[in-house]
Length: 298
Image (cartoon, rainbow, N blue to C red; front, side):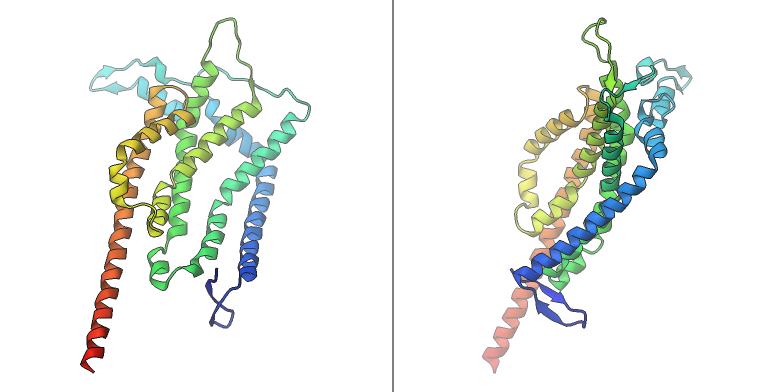
């Protein structure tokens, strides 16, 4: 495979396979450096990361918990609501560590996950800079802003998981009991695993429009295909929502609604890509016919 690339002098050439691998290696190295630096930053910000972010969703004063409780006791058109079920995470949840090195390993893992999340814009940009030379000039122009758009979707997904799904999951899973004789003693690793998996999963899932864009560009999917299999996609969305949320209808609908919206947005994006490709193909054919007619005339 050979990619055209611009040299330091501004000229164009073709990269050999080994040069291609060397270029990829440096993009990967820069991505790992960004992750490592931000991981160190997160490691030294231990108190803020744990007390203000990781452990916050289990506290009654967390913004989502307070808003839901206020909503359950709001005064609407002169009628005072009394929905105590919306007052979640009211009971104190004590976390335990059952291994000698449990807290230090937890600290390292959390720092790594935080570094991955914070370095996401850098990683996306590095891989975009690697693939960009393979695009035609009009394709590169059409995909301008892809890094910013994909980064925005990822962070929206992470925030959605953190502020909406995480407190609901913590409340449901920590308060669920099979018997009054069984006491929940939650391991901190289990708690953090739940929070991080939810946030990372929703961050990746919210990249659906970007995935649809590139799959359409390379001809794997079309808007017609996505409309035809919309019902199948809805089933898959409900399955995904059931996997990443606690088994209650409210949480699953919170995930399903934005995912269904993202799917419809993806159909629109796929349609725009197809129209663009058809327009370029038509322009190419008209130009080819024009050149053929000119040759015949001469």
